[in-house]
Image 1: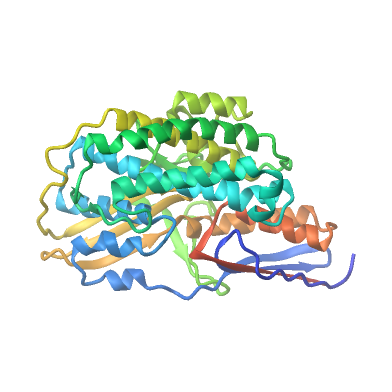
Image 2: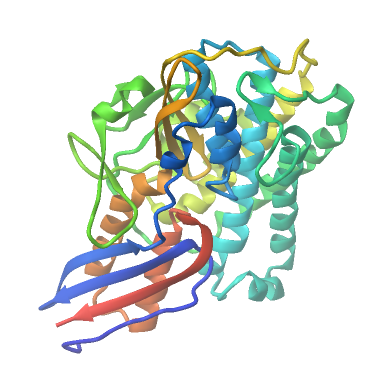
Length: 430
């Protein structure tokens, strides 16, 4: 093995945001692994201070072009807690379908266009169209279906404009949903085909002992509500989030790193939801998971591509049920009045747990805000995965090591800054 070597990879797409990976090896052992996120701070919490609560959902949706609904829903739930709002059950169902539409759009993008090229040996989805044209077309159509759900319910696909504190600005007519229901029937079959395809991809033997963290709802697969649970015994209300989780600044990154105070790194996202809520998946999704070789437990992060596909099937099945039972509410929204107080919310973004906290004054103006996205919660665990992978494969050729490190990062579908740019990898060895 060479005494020193440097690996740099530039202009790597298929990851959202700008980052740099630094690996230090000394005397045949990995000394440090840093996934550096050097996107400039965006100060959203500071921008929110002094703004009226009715402005918040539209403002926070601009945090992310992939997950605007996640931020809208998290903020709305926290604010409605402060204001003492109880929404109509049909409005609740519509919000859930809207959020599932965002999941479908995000999962279809990641599974077919960002992650699959790693497994089929192509550099990108453009090359993949030559050997897997049917699969790529299916992914594009599933992504489009997610956009259609968001457009019909949210007013537009990116940064929806129809959601508000108390409900929606406008609720759809039952007839407006007929075409969407037919498209979801196609989506259900397409999602099944995707599961069958991705379950045949080559997966490395790589099991990790994660502390999974997700929401848990007594009746539903977790999306908007529930208690916070973990695979190591955590079971708390969302309002206790900051009693058990902490964010820390590190020198090499502009992103904060989260950990469980009592233990350390943990994992949020599809793999955590699946492992902690398998029994809440739709029966058709449970059956498809078992046929794919997953019986409710999956500790291989590379198989997250299968789990996202299983969730896509659940999305279509549950959306069909909710829209099939939809009755137009008397009012699209309930009236709200300013009230001072504190509100806490966790929802499940496509990439995992998203925490929002707000404090309002008597006029309904924001005094404090706290937003913790899933990638910040996963960053410690991503680095632990990389540390172990590099330690186990120090003899691997440079090009292969680089590709595998990128694939390891993409297992998480990280959103480093809500924009796709590049990753630089430096391998420093003595």
